[in-house]
Amino acid sequence: MNDEIKIPEGILCSNTHEWILEGKDTCTIGLTDYAVEQLGDVVFVELPEIGSEFNKNEPFATIESVKAASEIYMPVSGKIVEINEELINAPEIINNDPYEKGWLVKITSETVQEDSVGLLEYEDYKEELD
Image (cartoon, rainbow, N blue to C red; front, side, top):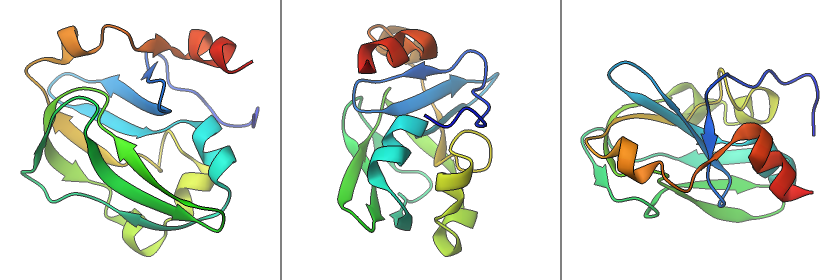
């Protein structure tokens, strides 16, 4: 893993390698540095429309790299309120900074507390990978 990447405090990770950071009114979702490392150079990201609603574990986006195309799954149920539009023209941002500039979407969620059960803190997630 890239030791230069700063991991935000308080993120939770799913077993499908998405991360979520709960904020005051919204939750930010992205791909973990492990997932990005496995994908290789990201060349395309398809993000959902603002206002779309997704259930936990439902695919909400697609990412393509030089190695493969993968679906990205919603770690908690919610409604898309913002997408990272920078990624549309510069998907490689995800490779360089998956947590700060490379986030994918922001959502509102009524069920974030219940849906977060089973998600792992970053340190525990990293241990599961070893």
